[in-house]
Amino acid sequence: MRVRVYHGAALAAYGFGQGHPFGPDRLDAFWREFVRQGLERKTEIAAPVACSAEDLALFHTADYIARVRRQSASGEGYLDYGDTPAFPGVYEAASVVVGSVLDGLEGLIEGRCQRVFVPVAGLHHARRDTAAGFCVFNDVGVLIEALRRRHRIRRVAYVDIDAHHGDGVFYSFEDDPDLVFADIHEDGRYLYPGTGAASETGRGAAKGTKLNIPLEPGADDGAFQRAWPRVEEFVRAGRPEFVILQAGADSIAGDPITHMQLSPASHAHATARLCALADEFCHGRFIALGGGGYDRANLAAAWTGVVRAMLDASGEAL
Ligand SMILES: [Zn+2]
Image 1 (tube, rainbow, N blue to C red):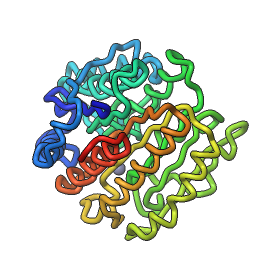
Image 2: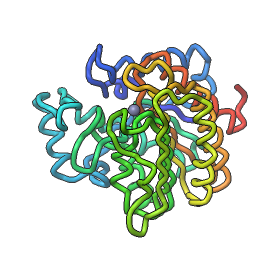
Image 3: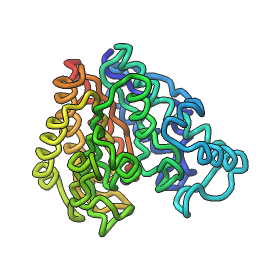
């Protein structure tokens, strides 16, 4: 099995309650469609794994980690200015999201698998010292730091097609010339978090290593197809040693909290093309993260499409 997918109740525990846009039923919706398509027979299903506080500290500040732990015990208050509530066990649940991504990385480094998909992960709004936008710990940030400090892999490409700008990743690595960042999102003038203008290209030595492509509300597959070649060219020019995709499904038509009109075909296309780049530059090693997506049918279609594209790109029969 060359494609590994993480699934289990411990991953679904990361959510803000039934009825919340980021509810625990998101993972169930994905899994039902995944099984309906028979994908569990073509992939390696891995159990979620918790990470340690030491893992979190690769990216997050000690103060913030301690604060999440305290509020996880009480289950009270917000972890940011009012979007991301604490709940009992939030520390453990958020640690499982990060731990599963790190476990996937180990699988790739050890050569046990070639591509990894972690639904629920891709919590791209969290900063080093605070939660934001439903994101408690930033698994992308921890992954990038783990690649550098534990595996001496410095040049990392991060591509984000979630409707929201990946601000937690962008600003944490804004002055880092070795983080090749490309993000197609709904224009920040119309959507949270309000950032990601085309003029934001990185700072200092990192100037020119970040590509932000804001699209108008209502942008469809045609607009995505016109923007995509720039992303691919940008990633290729960056000659990354590792490729990460945040495949947020909230950029698909019908999402209740955004205004983009993509179809799952865009997510499948991005995955296929990035797998080809990973084959060219990174020994095929590729991690895709589920990201946002609040219409359950949309996220099920987009994420299964991502897995199918990974299988296809690995020469596995569909
Ligand atoms: Zn989003």
